[in-house]
Length: 100
Image 1 (cartoon, rainbow, N blue to C red):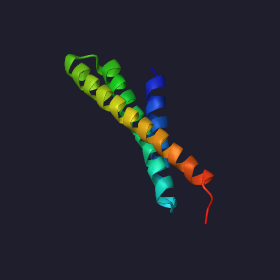
Image 2: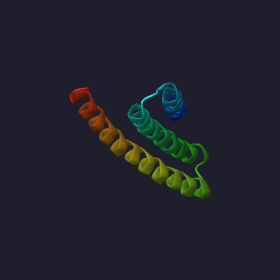
Image 3: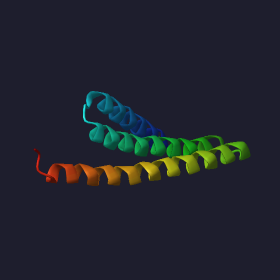
Image 4: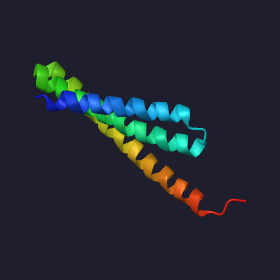
């Protein structure tokens, strides 16, 4: 099962990428948007890590821990997705309004 380590690595790299982009950005709205995107990838990292742990070990304790990680990962990704849509709409409103 090489797919889960690849997904874990990609999620982790994208999480780090967005966190670095937050530091480089000066606009607070852009920082909030990038933070919400990073939450999505943090959640996917936790989700895939939980699945991978159960597939690798296949014990009852890894099942419980994996389910816990999956629940946390889904909730983190869902909150990041909602925030991302909110800040994307706010950013579009800011771009549409005339600058004075």
